[in-house]
Length: 388
Ligand SMILES: CC(C)=CCC/C(C)=C/CC/C(C)=C/C=C/C(C)=C/C=C/C=C(C)/C=C/C=C(C)/C=C/C=C(C)/C=C/CC(C)(C)O
Ligand SMILES: C[S@@+](CC[C@H](N)C(=O)[O-])C[C@H]1O[C@@H](n2cnc3c(N)ncnc32)[C@H](O)[C@@H]1O
Image 1 (cartoon, rainbow, N blue to C red):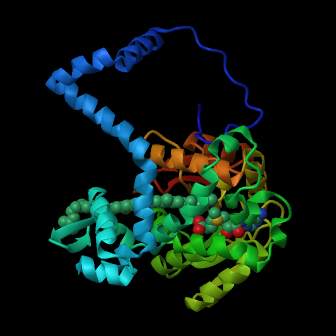
Image 2 (image 1 turned 90 degrees about the vertical axis):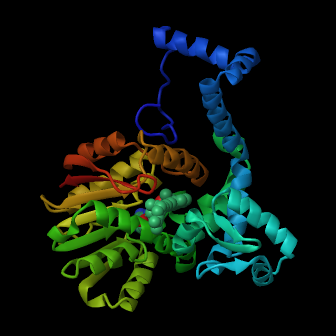
């Protein structure tokens, strides 16, 4: 699929089959060899070829076992094993008591977690975190996101139905209440609370990526559109003490943001406005505007309307920073695109776009000089910076 790796827009036409080029004929020949047990037996006898074959076999096994591995991870998070190990090592017995599990059963889980580089048995029955476990122990947002996957997995239980369009209402569509169409600005506190809390918790890593990749010290005033509870603004305000802070989100979310920014001592520096970013005129006293994890939530038509409203509202010269996971050639971007493409399919709205798709949307809306800014972690976000 050209450009983005997300849901094909409904009106997209399929291309006719290309003529059989040399590359296509070679690929066909290669696939027939690899698919043949005789060829694979031959490869297994040659040392270099065996090494390549084993890597391919491991890759395929990882795909096959992926669900099992995710369940091991999910169970460790639900039992809070990484939290329990955060301050140092623990014995199997102490962990079993804290988790309320039989020690032999917990050991079974710990052994698999060790095989997945989540924990390490440093001495018999004495466990410490391994690298991946240490990352999760240090990031409440990542643990919350792993817990949130319960909903996603239930929706994926009917992936065929999602692909055929027969799955009906999904749990993710209910969770992301604004993505279901209708009057998003009319959503009440109860409807926005679950997703806003998850977004606040999971913002820490994203904020690191965004603030590390683009210099916000050059701006006087930053407006975060769809800024949720104000977690990104608070991080930006902490990193740049002179920055004035503005936030725009749905009215029920704006109320939460007001409260969170006040709790962080930022009330004096910030102003929060509620409304609908598709149609409400947006505040235009900022010299930089951020759209963090916003465009990806919406199909192309709606993304165009959001950008159109932004372009109408903002003063010429205002900088616009779009930050979200984008499809691209790096391993991180490919992993993120395959994950988010199914996430948006289940959510019933949005798509994981490539950098080219987003730059084209920005240019179409009238923004100038869009450029790609890579972040430290393309799994989480890539930036496109442009000017009104
Ligand atoms: C000598 C020493 C101390 C060490 C030497 C060894 C060494 C150098 C180790 C490196 C250690 C290191 C720095 C590790 C770093 C690891 C990192 C940064 C890991 C990051 C992992 C991030 C993950 C797994 C992120 C997952 C994110 C997910 C699943 C996000 C989901 C988001 C969703 C569903 C968002 C929804 C919003 C919507 C709807 C899209 O708008
Ligand atoms: C995926 S969340 C991202 C929140 C935040 N930017 C972050 O990265 O943590 C999308 C945000 O867009 C807001 N939003 C959705 N539809 C909106 C609309 N029509 N007008 C204003 N805000 C909207 C949601 O309330 C939510 O806070």
